[in-house]
Length: 254
Image (cartoon, rainbow, N blue to C red; front, side, top):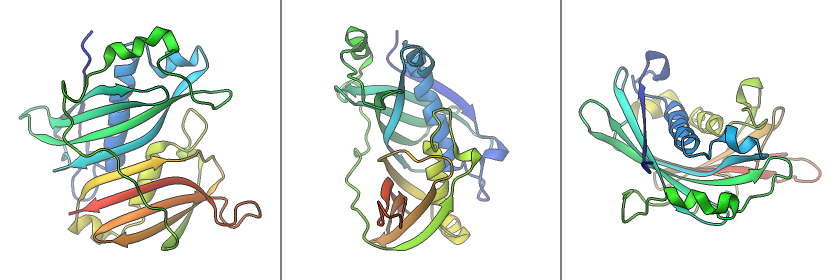
């Protein structure tokens, strides 16, 4: 079986913002759909893993774009696995126009597999006698020309916004959906920011889970044209007065 999966979608009018371009959160969902299809077609889909009480968890996601797909454009996403380690696997994406072939950008992601009952990570290489290694396409075989996920510095202060979590934030695993954090982060910025700038790179690291009913504190700090964001839960509680870090993110605009 080919090591690359190609996933197609059209940019619908209800998936674009007021500039006529795709919401980053919607693009993120399409990337995850592509990853899910690639995994399923090779016997590693979430539905197949659930039979043995395992599931995939997204740990890191980096998206770098030269332009964002616009309304009515047809897009294809290529995805492949770059490496497999004991506890993590690296998956890459190429995003391009399906009609003229121009490349919108690339994305990198890191995933872990966990036992849904214990929440402990699984040994990817030990499962199914290392079958997952058959689908690796190394960086030499299939380059992904964007930088890997870099370190995001912890925030000591910055502007703070508190967001309550609701029904529509929760996914099938029972915790706050990974893409919902991206949407909440972008909601921190005024209309003018989105009109006058576009996101060139978005990095997000998922540190721990949050659940329906958690109040999330968003700390935001601007440094040298970049916005660093940290999301914490349980801020001000007797056990964790400084809060527990759920997500760290970095936005680079142009």
